[in-house]
Length: 171
Image (cartoon, rainbow, N blue to C red):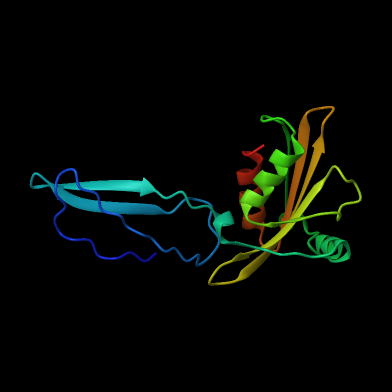
């Protein structure tokens, strides 16, 4: 994390904006913490804030044709490379809303890849300083049951699990 120095005195009612640049060194599951220390009325104050940063913020979308997607899907077939959740739809099953949420994740939404046109598939790479982690996603809606099956596969088990948890909360 990089920040710029702040003036030692901030007047009452004034605001100071701090831009924070964050580099992902390795995959993570807990949000980074920002510790702020300052004096107020002569007493030292200490505030710890959770930054709204999750692993998907470091996604690079990856476009690929159907053949490449399923070839890579099969290559990521070890049990620890896959995370899957089956859950009830909380926010409905509107196709455009589902697409928007998947795009908001940061990966590429691949059109006409899955043989079932109702399913959604996505691909991306999590960029960290230590490594690149390829990620593939498949979301299978069941409108009749109002349920989803979400499957994530990646070259790193902790990334698959974390992305699956994050995304399941969105639907």
